[in-house]
View 1: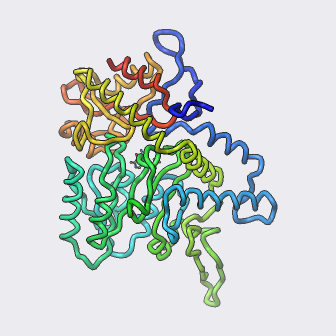
View 2 (view 1 turned 45 degrees about the vertical axis):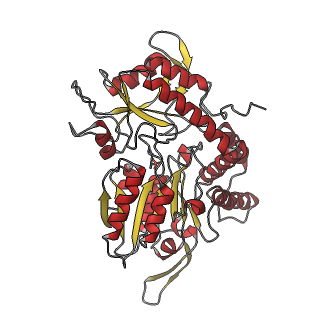
Length: 423
Ligand code: PMP
């Protein structure tokens, strides 16, 4: 058995990449925040199931029954992993973005939405058909709670309201005071959805303990492959909403009416929002990742990752040209996600050099959180382009940043190589 503090085996760890300086080196994936490498265990579980897959919820055949069992038992595994309440629903989606758009489509009439301007675009933007209050960037976790309380106190207390907050920032890795924000939301009669895209891979998320109403996350950041995500939480709004997608699987019965129209009786379970043939392999892979993290001892993985965070912090602090970006202060608790700028360097060139000279994969840009990154960089010197990197100018002020992110599969050597390269 591997030693208790070893990284979990992941795909891609044996891939060599060419260096501009000649030769090859084992690729160091330090871009977990974008997509984490899948766990070898997840891949093995998927491969073991692959010969047996059949249509889900449709067929009488043996393999269809196996697939249906796997699909529904994955739902239960994920519910347990998230500490769901007995009457919560676990809805399968394509991603966190999809999960939050589903919830946005399920808001009751006249719902007000409260969202910090610092959110990832996936949690900032889906609410555009509702009345949205964009909350200012707080500079401490306590201030985040105050800002929310003030905003909620000013609202019409009779109408429905939803707060959307990210548990761990995809830019700074900083942890948000989710439990306190949930208490504040509930004290004012509002509900809260947790964007756990970055939190879930780095930290156990317990919906009951945090007392949040919904949690959204993506498989591809939780050590499973692309293409599947989860929205878990309160059933009532989901049950009352129009189906997110209309089609087979979401409807219990469909009948032609005498007047020529069609009557549809929609499911009231999670199936209501899961029309079409589901991504059984994607769902199976998320459940497999949840089991692998639990069996490896999630707390142990968190402790090891925190060691790496400390090493990166200390290592970067020793380089005078480096400025690590933070909203809550340099010592704020964070997961294995850190963004920084290097004086005298264009961030895109810096990231390209890490790849070409050291075989290290990081990300540069504004990380789909444009308002936050602009705040952290200080000002908005130039309109940014796409979700990725805008063109950086030659001026003093950086226009984008470099992000290093890691997790359960990261060996010490990747972090050492990264710090050597930056230094
Ligand atoms: N929220 C956060 C905090 C994220 O970091 C991301 C992905 N970068 C998302 C939402 C969106 O996830 P996905 O692209 O898987 O929909």
